[in-house]
Amino acid sequence: MTWGEYFIVLGSCMVTMLACRVLPLFLLKGRSLPDAVERALGFIPSAAFAALVANDLLSPGMFAAGIWPAAMPLVASAVVVVVAWRTKSLLGCAVAGVVSYALLTLI
Image 1 (cartoon, rainbow, N blue to C red):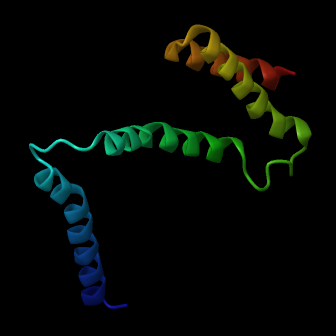
Image 2 (image 1 turned 180 degrees about the vertical axis):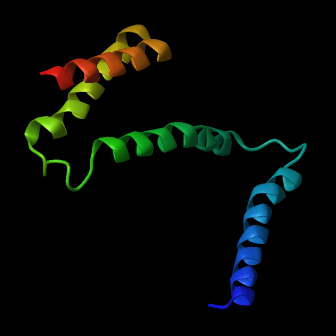
């Protein structure tokens, strides 16, 4: 690929990304969305966060180093789920996750 072709591809990608991010803002400005659409869009942040967490916790080669190194993040995440259910505190979840993972590495 020559530099000219590279800049054509780069420019096309930049224009497409800009259009996908900016055009909806201008087209939907001042309009209200239907309740079903707003409800569906409300699930995007939690779904994206769940995908990031699942990607960190589960991997194809997670048991290559043994059962315990693969189980430590899962046990720590279970502790975080319990703390989240009981306290509903983001700070408490973060502290519980870090502390539980640190303690599990000592075992």
